[in-house]
Amino acid sequence: MASLLDELILTMDGERSKYEKLINLNGEKKDSIIHKKLDVLEAITIQEQAIADSLLKLEDKRAHLLKSIASVMGHDGEQVTVSWMINNLANQPVEQERLTVARDQLVKAADEVQVLNFQTQNLLKQAIEMVEFDITLIKSVKQAPQTANYGKDATTTGEILGNIRFDAKQ
Image (cartoon, rainbow, N blue to C red; front, side, top):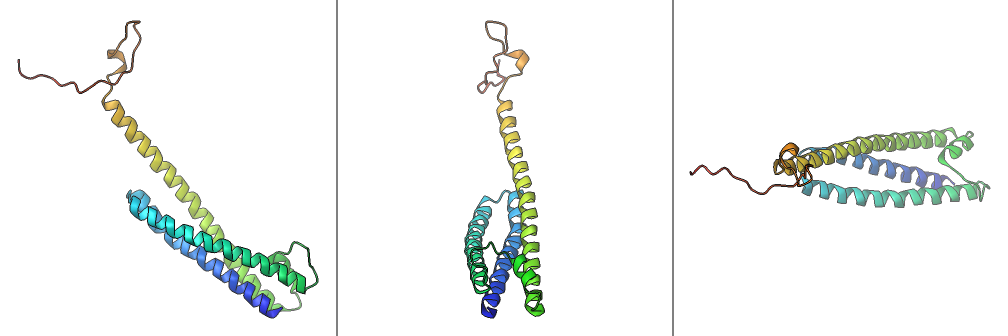
């Protein structure tokens, strides 16, 4: 049981470490979005995907370890969580404390990643809005004013005009 608990704590520390890598990459990601460095953003996204894949493997390993620990403790078939483990280790205060610290650090890192992802999502929305604004602005430069471009039925057509130039030679 002690070796399973040690492996669980190591797995949770590994997850926390991966979350911290995501936190560190977030600053570079924001910078690449702000400065429109798409090649850097693409590289960061590839790194994040690799980290997410390894996090998924660690999460599966943690779930498997929790099932193994539950089986050893005679709680086979029950839904066992880390918090449940902490509550059931009341007679082993050292292990209980180690597991509590590992859980708290993991939760803190995961929460920070969630907040940073929300901020990045908002930043990306703003960047998309700016691109849409730029596209609309570029389109509107080629359009005649709505009051100056009428069709046969006396309504505005909103057609895009070609390159109309003023002929200075007369």
